[in-house]
Length: 357
Image (cartoon, rainbow, N blue to C red):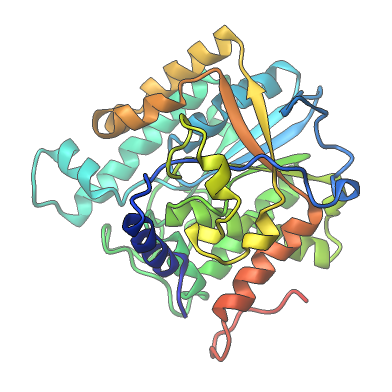
């Protein structure tokens, strides 16, 4: 079975051939079905939206710093309006080779160096979210493998877990992890569902499935699949939840405007999968106050390991507007269904994933 990473390799080859830049974000078009937008969705005016009082928001962050880059301003506004926020860190960011080399000062690094890097990024994350107004208890660290989330579609059960080529672990060994679980898709989706069921969010903020980073695309699809299954089992109604997406890794994003055109023809992970299902996403601007932007910058500066190697990229997100896509309930169901169908996920596998249909 191919993964998002395999699809991404193919699409990036095509991108290089036509000499397109490798960064960007989303498109600006009306949703396919206005009636299917949840009643709790924010009021949209001139492609912007307001935050209602008391809203409950969960933000899924593939790595420490993505929560600040994508939603640092939104998190502050929700708290200011008396709302509740949970940030879910999917990984500790412990698979970034260039960052580990920079941190250790050595070209040859060990598995323990990657683990120590993950511990440091956890500490940075706690400091960062404190600038946004969050306490430690409002952050959840799952500890799944950095650079490996998309592989968990193949490694579905704990009988055959995925092993990180960086940490050499097949489970989370971080003391800070929410649950110490094996690296497999079933356990990841179970934890996502547990968090959603316990916190009962009004808004779910996820990486856009079209993001070109495999961990981001996989996070988006995993959460959508959990929501789809919840709706199928009648544990939750998609009519009562608003799902918003964000981009970090997409050509020309966030500065230039061409990403709006390109994203409309992009599918999961940069592939052609679910292009039709995702093309109707509506993109909304969230405008920050001067104070919110200042605190967002303070939060981002709390990630010295990342600023040292990616500072130029990260500073592009210190801008007065955050951009979010809005998915309809129909899209929430159709996108993971299209991914499963077109890649033949779990078909013929002895340890197959149960169907939600």
